[in-house]
Image (tube, rainbow, N blue to C red; front, side, top):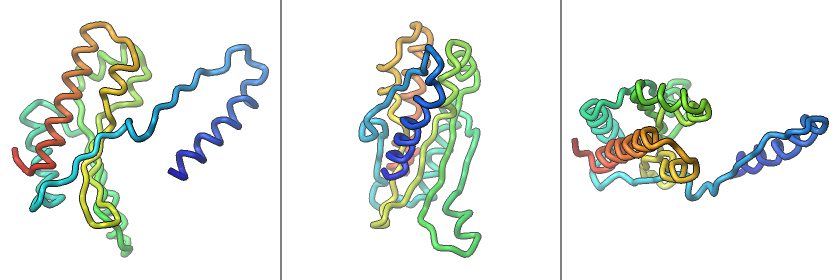
Length: 168
């Protein structure tokens, strides 16, 4: 939360000074952080590794390509330091991504779709992703692109549910 407040403070300081002479300052939109993320805890007996395996298998079965994976916690542990589970999996349907970006390049900022596997301070592992419903409802889209966004959201929730339950 501290980082968000610092970023907001810096952006408020930066925008007026940089664009003071500009007749058209950029428009800034903000969302409530509590509503911007969907969070699922792992079911009893499901490990982080089993959740990841279930998500990868499910993604492949529904044609969502794994386009990136960062094992942040593993990287820190490889440096000899203590770190919780923290992996970020990135999924995408490349054809759909191109259609969205051709409509408006801003959608590239939301791609690829990410699911974080993260251990909290109590040792509980969570799966967390951007709440795509918030994005879908906030911006008007042509019907074809709206259908793509809704389908992608459903696919991401399917992948996340498979991970949380360990079932695929």
